[in-house]
Image (cartoon, rainbow, N blue to C red; front, top):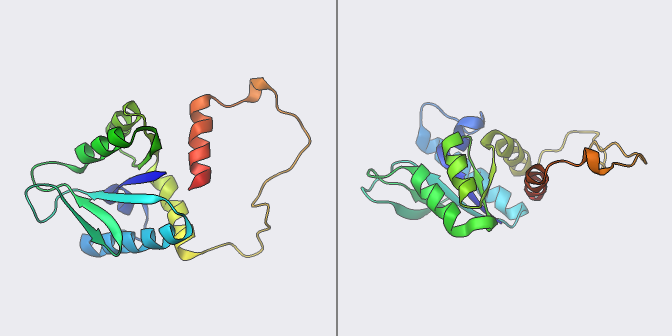
Length: 166
C-alpha cells in the first residue's frame, strides 16, 4: 500500500505537529512521526507539501521520508491527484480536502480523512497504549449472526479494510 499524504493538511489535523510559529518545525515533526510509523508499518510513504524553494516541483527527503515540494508554479493538490492516478487502486491518499478526494477517487485511489490518520499516526509513533487495555482492543464478542441486510456497503467495507491495515 502506498500512502500519499497531503502534508500541510495532516499537520493542521494533529495538535502535536502544528507549531503555528514555524511550519518548518511542523514539517520536521511530521516526517519524524512518519519515520517512526514506517518502522512499525511497512507502507510506502510520499509526503507532498505546497511551495518549496524552487519554481518547479522538487523531490527530496526529510528525516528519511520521501518528500515532494510542489514549487511556486503548481500546487500540491495537482501533484497528489497525479500520483494517485498513476498508482491507481494501490494508492491511499490522506487528506481532508473534498475536491482533492473526489479527484483521487476518480483515479481509483482510496481516500482516508487526515484527522483519522493523524490519530493513528500519533498512537503508532508514540507507541502509546492506554493502561489496562486488553488484547481484544474493545471488541465485544457475541454469537449473534449478522445477515446480508446488515452488511455495510462495498465502498465502506473497502475503506474499513484499508483503515485496518494502517
